[in-house]
Structures are given as structure tokens and as C-alpha cells.
Length: 72
Image (cartoon, rainbow, N blue to C red):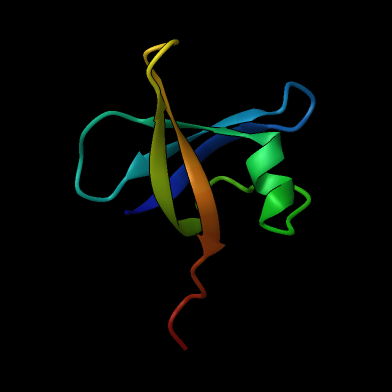
């Protein structure tokens, strides 16, 4: 899936990604940002990501973040 960072609050450790193809916004947590080797997310950045659903909590969140470089 590909989308853009809508918001990210490093202090709270959570952000929101908006998928390009529409649908529900996806939460992204600091642990996944760190796992991707990033310090923070900046609104407007584009990423590819997978969506994982926690069945017990009935919530989905982004995993396997990969920053997409802008076309030159």
C-alpha cells in the first residue's frame, strides 16, 4: 500500500497515514518508525507500507514502512 503522512506526534509516538487509494486512515507507531531506521515522520512524506490488524483490539496499523523518494 502507498500513502502519505497526515500527522506524526513523536512525543506520543503515534501518527496517521492516508492511503493513496482512499479508505480508512492507518495508525503508525513509533516502534515501526524506528524499525524502519527513521527518527520521525514528516507530514507530506510518502511511504509504502503493509497493514497489520490486531484481531483482539480490532485495530489496524502500518508495518514495514519504506520511504518513497520523490521523482527527480
